[in-house]
Image: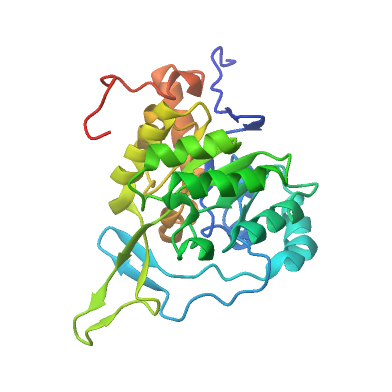
Length: 312
């Protein structure tokens, strides 16, 4: 018998429509995953962050396991813009899922230049990783402060007509101010959020467990922080929010959607289970069917909470 109430998993992120809200977090997704599931089932493909020139990354060791996640100090190794144009773009353009290119740089000028150079046919959106160190602000990330956020997004917006997503950092005491600054400067969506700065020490050697001393904490431990930021940013701005941080189960996905995210990114969970994104898409469809929900618009932002939460 034909289903009288088909489930619609599609979501709109500004001018971009995704077939479902599940996509990878930058840095956790590669063409190798095509060996274990059909990559075209995803809502979008988000590539590992590229920089303009080649970059080796940080010294080893670069990753250490934690009880509730991992800390990494990979350091954004990159083969540069030429490799992206000649090798990566042709490969990913063959897929139906929209291609989101993550970019980063250490100065306003470098960021603007790279944004213009990746604005190519086959690219559906640009994700600006403004959580990296800004050498023009004493090494603080662009997204640490509203003023530097506004300036870098303004510069990026002038270089592209493609949808522009600003990836924010949890390492700020001004999440709402930063989100509003990105929106005012022309960001089309916010990715909330990147990793949380942390460290770990080997008590046997009394040395840091990472070659870079500190790194980015990801996984279940940071989920409450990312969820709180998602809720704050969704309430404060008028642009779509993409939740990211510690998402590995259907319940996690639903929490972020209910808090106001229109889509989510999956990162660390993919290292533990390479097929987790495909599984979550099926789990979400099954849950909606069981609940009699036909559209994700019935879920997104449906949180029942007081107008003013504590500690905002």
